[in-house]
Image (cartoon, rainbow, N blue to C red; front, side, top):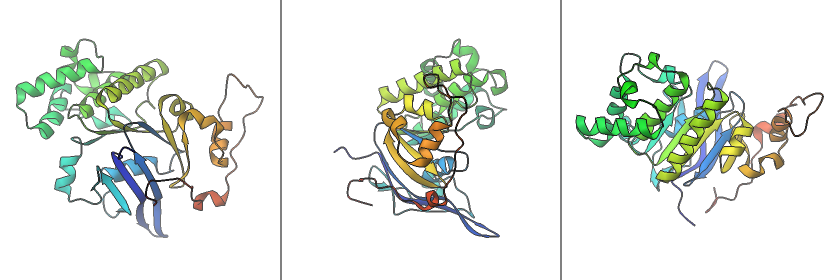
Length: 289
């Protein structure tokens, strides 16, 4: 069996509150290969916090612990900030939800892509400019020369998301974490962005963690899916089998979605069970947990 790019066991993220310690992520475990792994759940389920914990973006007083968090067999758990800065972007990149809040409003698009590339490659300005133009072409932006000199407020939401993808992929990372990258886009632009991501990930042999709340989208786009609830993974399933999921939480999410092939007069309402918060899933990891 091929060794995974990323291996995580018993990941936990906790924050102190007046009522005691709150665990936003509780015992998450998974392996990531050169595949598209979907992470699905409602708001507050711990999806985005899991991605941030991997990149060391949880700031004090938040605390991240894990039995194992390894990239190519090397521990990346709670590394010093200087080492994490070298790792972010160069080996693991993250696309945030809304480019309007992720792009620097006082720097041009070209300056931002060049900065991301130069920081991790050490190349000079000419090489960085060529790389920026290459990436703008790679994400299928028309008139890349104009966009290179544009500011973020001068581009649309769909173009801004493609610019974010170009910037995150410029340093050639091994893993891309996409945190609801299409949530603010209309359907036609969303599908175009997904096609671009799919092609780039396949061409580069990367691992993709695709965080979303859209079950149908994940079923179509990903290879494997983790379903999260209250900070835990309650089910893991192949994406093609998602509509055959067995856990009542996953079934409840699926039943609450309208379907053209199975119309109903009234959608189901998800009835939560207290036991879901503390259930453990039986997942056959190599070597055990």
